[in-house]
Length: 260
Image (cartoon, rainbow, N blue to C red; front, side):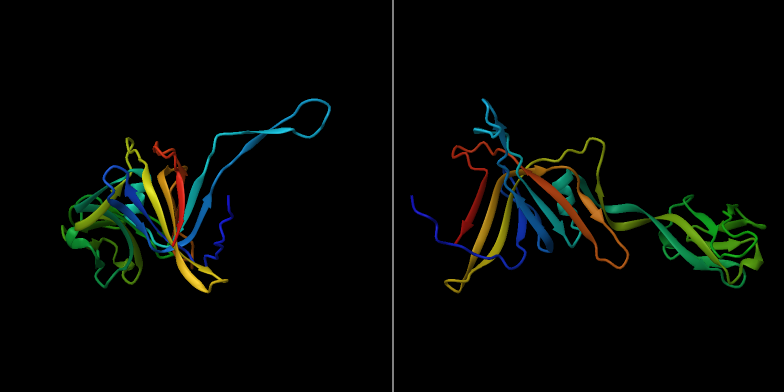
């Protein structure tokens, strides 16, 4: 047996992909990763006996290897691959909230009023310091009075209180997007395993050469949770952890680290 002479440094993050195990088709691609950590587990249990206080043997335990990914962009394909969510496109009802300035005459218009879903509108007085600040207004069919409003099918609102001109109203409503996309996690949603491949570049300082370094997990499945992180003054980040599973291959491989 000879030692492997190749030693290298990976200076940057790899890109990665998930593939359907049966068809081999790509189902998700990670090109904006911030961090990727492979954990290859080899737990052992100490065996003690006799008068010595030190273990005389180690018994191998079940392996719990995994890969943790942190991504800088939210890709719905990754959500589908991770959780088994379903994606639909077309007519989609989307909730919206906006703060609107009341014009002279006590009127204003929803920005998505042309696509308003009837009956979903709720209005709250947003300007602070008024006697009625925070009050929810009541919708009426016509001729609104104080703390009431009427609304047309295209989202044009008329308030019954003229003193609210120049004030802010917070509007909650739903509208229909004809070309919307919905990724839905349902009560019967089930995720499934995928083949995972990480495509990296490495550098050998002794030979002064860069080369490809590819890591394959032949069968992996989401473990734990798919996290979507939003923070003030910070870019979106999302993370997931994939468990390494037995791929039931004749060569017994679960992970390959390949270089060229």
